[in-house]
Image (spheres, one colour):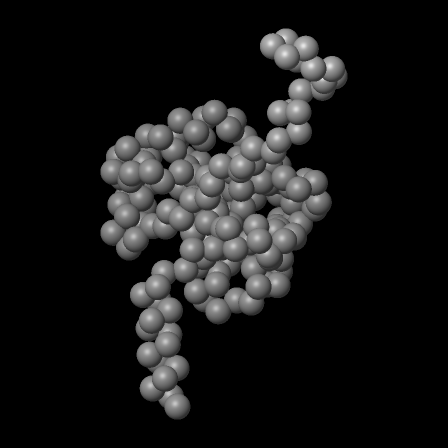
Length: 194
């Protein structure tokens, strides 16, 4: 426009779409890391860190969903946690594992199960992963770990989508990181049957 005095009224570069950054994560815990994480959580001065991490690993809930859990929305008899507000704006009913029920049970006396701030949890997590010597493992990776474990347990795509709240198969796939060793074991066991 300036150099050639062309009568262009808009910048054509504004219509160019930039490629999306591939920020997908595939971080899973191995058995030794899981044990170190549990030891570090047992030693945490923050009472809320272990139950938050266990609930995240057992249900695939996000940190914000766990922190907003209210006693009135948790049915320990049926093993369901109701989330009236989720990231995608839709409510969700999350089935609870036995371990999640046992973790929540002592906390149910409070109206809000975790009356702590996200900043406190963030700082607590940094302390825990430092003590556990976990490299590049975020609290949100517990969601990936849980979803991957659900598939390894044999749950179907609709079942896992119901638990995680993913509305598209593409997003659910992004959160699923199956271990090839587990698939190889499953294939061996299936081929030995036939």
